[in-house]
View 1 (cartoon, rainbow, N blue to C red):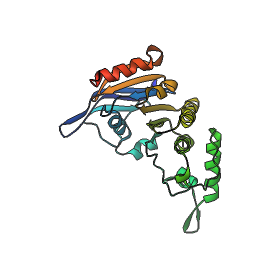
View 2 (cartoon, rainbow, N blue to C red):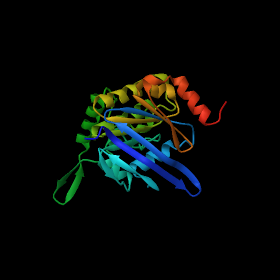
View 3 (spheres, rainbow, N blue to C red):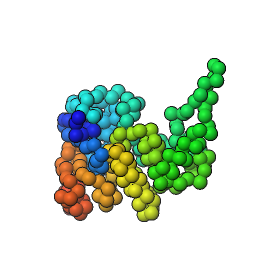
View 4 (cartoon, rainbow, N blue to C red):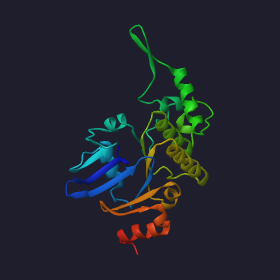
Length: 249
């Protein structure tokens, strides 16, 4: 069994004349939290979109749980246990919590020629799954639009855990959150690791990811410019590395 849940080797991706990724090697160990850092345009989002099958790499190989994979779409990677929580969270504001929790994975039972949605069962399971990871929501019928940013992130993370994610990818999960909400989201990330889930934490905020990450990977202009165990560097050193690579004095 491979020590890595995912390995990306020599990944290249261009869009016209723009070379977004220039032979990037990237890996995530089993039950490991990896912080993926870099300035705007560093290639973080492109790398992740290649990983989950949103983009196809021009060159390079991807291995998941030791097996070479060729994801044609995000549905392919999701089927193997890769869940991605983007900044927009893929939540529908006007839908209640329970509908969002099971969006695209609705529970149905067949009665004759008809398939009926099991609303009460999904309501119950949504609340139980959230409670199981320490998230207490007032009602499963609460409309997502009235939930705070931290609660929305919590729902997205709990949903990934419930559906058996092996690798959880979080895109700027603490952006625009209050200090208190950020603390709760970081606790949920640690809880995911306790449950055996590996995590990729994409962020601009080194101080947030530093609290929970085991390892830090820095990209700039489509290249990996640094990879460090957390104990090897301070947040300030990582910030200096990013700033120097971006040409900021």
